[in-house]
Amino acid sequence: MAHRPDDEYDYLFKVVLIGDSGVGKSNLLSRFTRNEFCLETKSTIGVEFATRSIKVDGKTIKAQIWDTAGQERYRAITSAYYRGAVGALLVYDITKQPTFENVQRWLKELRDHADSNIVIMLVGNKSDLKHLRGVSTDVAQSFAEKEGLSFVETSALNSINVNKAFERILTEIYRIVSKKALASEEPISAGPGEGKAIFLGEAQTSSQKKSCC
Image (cartoon, rainbow, N blue to C red; front, side):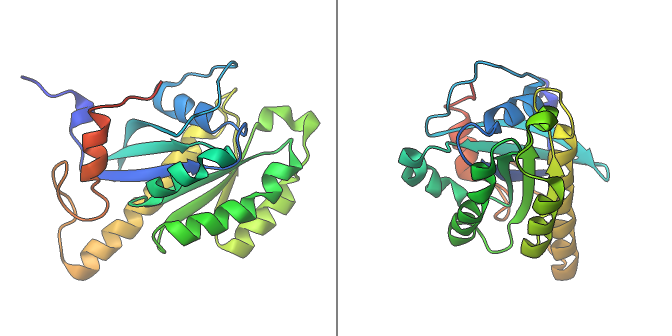
């Protein structure tokens, strides 16, 4: 039986989407993984995930992207899903100042629960609504630089910078992993469910039972 292309990869990276409810995390996920956008997207309950593979330096990188619910009542559920994540997109809505103010709290939670070496990108979503902007690009950029985060503004609606955001963070993770492998002279690549922390054996099992809506 022939394998589907998505079944074959060199690296598997778990990336989490975090931020307040309503900032567009689910639409960023669906835009990147399925090139879809839904204006009637309902609030995520618990956690959903989807996958997509990209090529970096001739290697196939499979991203397993987890969409964590932003509502406070689900925080206890989603906190467990930080484990094993090697990347995080911290999303806020450029039209809603409070969602940016809460970025600091999300960042603290991420750093409390995730691996200390996790790669973090600050994402200002809904850039198509510039006429309603409540958070300036300069302010967000300065915050990102102070916290050591990369930064990009996106529009899931218009598909602006969505691929760029995911591809940039996945490439950065790959570069770090490659350097560590070279330094230790240990091969990082392995089959599904094998290898080091970047291979998510538990997540593989979960993906057989659950798909993103």
